[in-house]
Length: 91
Image (cartoon, rainbow, N blue to C red; front, side, top):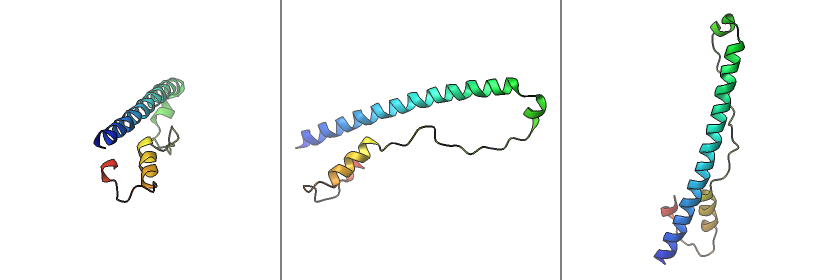
């Protein structure tokens, strides 16, 4: 039973790591694109425009938020008819 739980948790961790690596890659690409765009806009702006006070723009999330695999797995296990006690070790 312990081996089953351990292998299940290891699978969940590997899946989570894969998702996080993908998100890091997407964020790095988005950051590089924004830095390039910022440099271009600064090169085209006049000194007067650059001297104006900066007003922070509202920031929209760059990536749609997806349910995390661990969260989905926890919900699936908790809805199982075989689970009778809270699973704190999955939190």
